Amino acid sequence: MPISTGTAEVVPDPDFPQRVTLHVNGVPSSSLDLADPGFLDFEYMQQMAAFVALLPPGPLRVLHLGAAGSAFARHVEHERPGSRQLGVDLDPRLLELVREWFALPRSPLLRLRADDAGRALSTARDASYDVVVRDVFAGDRTPAHLVGTGFAAEAHRVLRPGGVLLVNCADRPPLTTARREVASLAEAFGPDAAAQGRLAAVAEPAILKGRRYGNLVLAAVRELPEEPAHDDGSDAPEGTRDGVRDDARAEGPHEGAQEAAQSPLGTRDVVERPDLRDPRLGRALRTLAVPATLLAGADAAAFAGTAAPLATPAPDPAT
Image 1: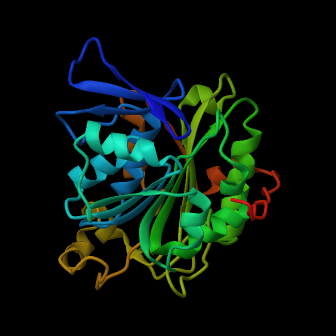
Image 2: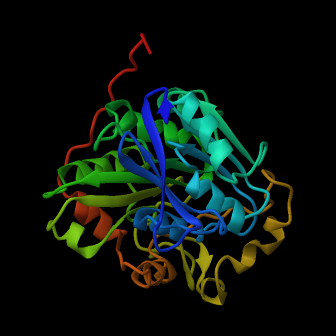
């Protein structure tokens, strides 16, 4: 099927008739189960879902940079009904077709906008999203204006305190791009991001060991206002880590946020942020159908090592 930027094709799964894969210019872009909106096939999306599960209960505001078939947006709405999401894709005809082909949440639950992802991010309001997802490729690379410290700073700006940026980074050994992307996130999200459990990288072990090309999920969390910059919890009150009581942490995911979850969307009474060193996150990733390894805290800093942050090029005034 012709689209504005090339071709799109829906390929049925021969083993599961209700499952389809959307190919854009011959490349698998989205995989959906037409009967199960919560289904995620791609491993990196399953990994992203584990991060979203750490956020306090209730609806979310999510910005998807790179919408394609909106598989992840369908999943978010299934898990967190009432969420407000914006999917951005450069191809207007593709967005028309996926509305026709797939049972996507309707506006205002999911709005689809034909736009450049960088422009959409730059025009978003400050502190307006709980989650920003970057999943944009031109061939096997992310466009340069969506990589680096400038992009990361813009994502930090539009995230609410405690919100999370999720990045799909495709790389090959020795993972130079991924390491530089993590360094870019660390620069934009603050020098204590790794030490405070606000920075992470996830991938299958074979990818992290440099054995093959593949996808890594990189994550960064916006700090809370006036958040203490204690590196390892040593300056936090006794019995806490990053200001969260150890007994409350052990009670289960965000037990203290139940009252906040009842507030109208966008007016939570209690602001929390996920700690990406949380053992539950590592356990969830290890127990996926294709197990993944979590590098958070000091491990994330070690992964970046001495890699230099990437500079985001200035926008092309012609676009």
